[in-house]
Length: 150
Image (cartoon, rainbow, N blue to C red; front, side, top):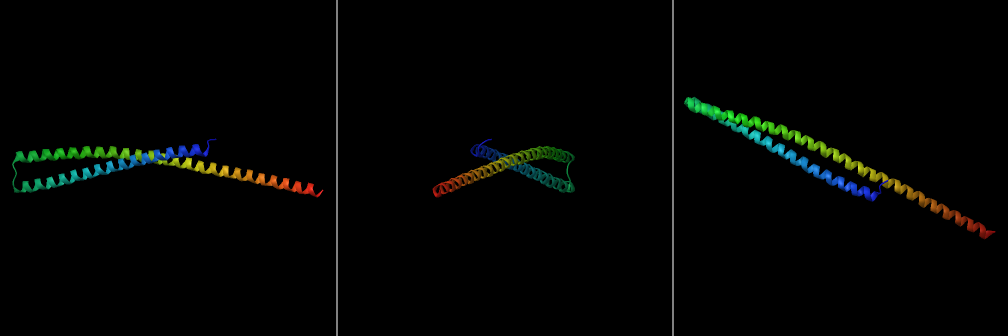
């Protein structure tokens, strides 16, 4: 069985891995949030632009200008679709990072529990050995007293 010192080294390595995975998960969450904000901005810009077109159309707008505006709205729609795809991918990555982090966290906790168990076992063995030594000393002392009274 591995010593507590060795297990502590392994526990430290696993904790470092856990912290690295937690950092990766936080970065993935931030990336997802940033992309959601970007989509929100794109959608708001599209809405504002559509309102501007409506206002211009009510004031009178040439057919050529209307086609140009519609073309631009189409480009905004494609940009929103692409951003949704980016968000979907970022969501998957974030979920994967979270799963990896939680698995590593479980592994690190298991090693800590193993260290605690080994420590309790060693403490119990040491206490038994100490008690055995005290019992032997008491027996020897009793024998010496018995011999000295004879």
